Length: 205
Image (cartoon, rainbow, N blue to C red; front, side):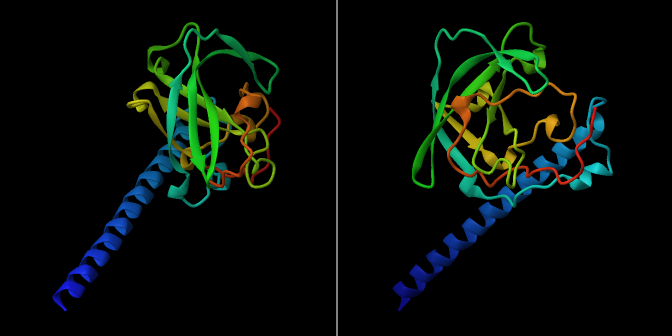
């Protein structure tokens, strides 16, 4: 009887720990999204006003889209021009490749870094533009982005949190130079996480 009681206690403790972990993660994502929305009001070039921010929507946080990937650096990569939706281009260099598993299938994303003259605060910034099968349905048709830092790579492991995927400014207004996700970053899967398609009216800039 004592053995059964102890096993039951361990099971309940484990469930409690899982619930606590999920609560901590929900709070973390809530804080991230609050900061993300606040940045629109702090940026003079922002396409959205405080009132329009109410039309920015997100999927409910889902830890199934918090994924550890295997990172392989790209050695001696050559800088290239990544096209944008405005017709201009921006210079990037491939920093590496992240391979991850989602719903039993393996996928990969190229990780990029800005090239050329870079402000100090952006030197360790990594950029992940991607498209997936939800684009044009529940998410912005032009794809979404993830921002990471070089120091996020630990022992060749890089955590990709698609709950932090966000829309480019082009999702809200014309007139911005938003990088177009390269073909190699088109995922054959629906990423139902992060920011949804903006349900306000897109502006003519």
